[in-house]
Image (tube, rainbow, N blue to C red; front, top):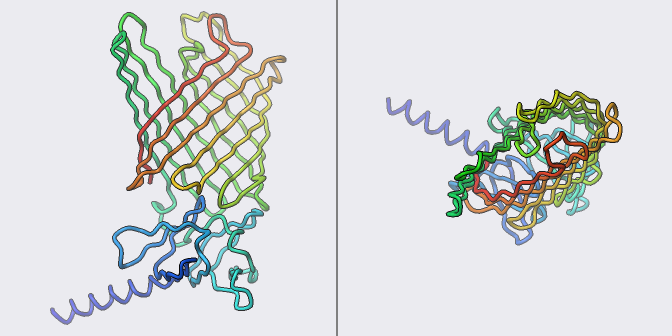
Length: 339
């Protein structure tokens, strides 16, 4: 029995040592031996056998990298590669990526995304959940906010979903609520181009909306994709269906709209990141109608994957139904956690 236990211990120890074969040299001269998990938004995650927590290393602090494992790698120009890394012997500022189609020499700043191919299903998931609560003595106002997101990244495609709800209850005034959700699928093309199909849902008492369903298809491009920011533009067409509250007394509306999207994501600014998005919908079958959705999220990271977020969302419609407002907005302060 002892022999089997000794053999098992040796096998586990050997497997662990074998896995920890990736090496990094940092700008301060420190060398880290471990297992590279991923690089996203300018932060490299490395697992080691001598620390309970994964190391989070700013990518611009990495001066040399070596790994025989296979990774999904994306460069600033949108080029996607599969392979490992080893230093360029003729230029220490460059790294060689041994892609199956041939070695590629790149500068470190050109690498904006790394994901270990051997990552399991959970390793490809990203998720977050936020909650917020406001209590005011005046009119006994109670407001509850909940936000969540779930995404998955594969080799050439990604899927993402989000849910956001705000409900308010106060004395002598009818309860109000606002709910929006999104489900999207993105397929990645060459040179940072992509196609996307997504569906947005909105329930909004201020706009007299029981449910708005907006299905759109678009074609887009990451104009800038670095370890500091991602800026993308997209355009396409959308089908818009609106069902109104009974008290509005309005028939349902169906229309075809154009679509133009603007997305800016700033990160690697210490513990702060910012994301803003503008979606414009000029009417096609409803000529003269114009809708605009704007959102801005400012996030401050705190230890153990928790964060504090301030979010602002604004909806505009120049042709609302009778009794509804042209503008609606919500400002949220939440506390959250992300996977």
